[in-house]
Image: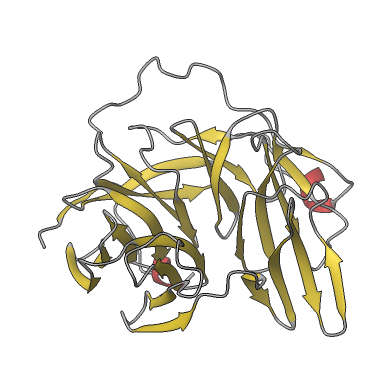
Length: 305
């Protein structure tokens, strides 16, 4: 597979390892909202008064439509079409196919740390055979190694871990909630029962929320060590996916990539092309999105105060 790589003039530094031809001009002129705190918190009270800086770092041309995205250091993983899992190095400009299928479908699930979860329907169906729910393929972005586990349709979904705490999505018949699990205790983080997307990095978890029988319209973040002080980053929008970086939360909204500080503050819109896929990925001070008229370009950007 051929991958074209373009590095911006700003370049990149080694600390990132640790931690469309339609540019959308005139498409969405509504300014991004300002993030506000839903509870008193020290982080919110000291939030920056100016938007964060978002600078393009690299562009990877995947050659086909990208669905689902994960980022860890200088490695990207994504689902190409619905039949391949690809691991790319955006610094070196190389890529390799880790898995390919011609008899089933692949769907990106989530990123947990430096692992990327992808559902393989196995039998070629989309859940029609309840006795064969498929499997989850786990990709380690650091090594490219893969392992598989059976799909567990009714089990809680682990969003992330911090010490002895884990954050999980729990599904009911008509609701979906985000909870913090500690030894011997389960505590609600979300209140509506309508969580559509969640992401966690370090001690912070962000989620897209809404009200029953309506599309998701708000983005929230909270420090799992202080679950009583969530911050409302955006409301009255149409958020899609959300991802958490070292100092920021990023989310997609009708083709825009929006970014706000963890503690709340002005929301910045990433420059350049419109976002083609609902997915967004973040790690450290970097964020990645799919762009291009066919969603076949992955752009890596640096986020700084």
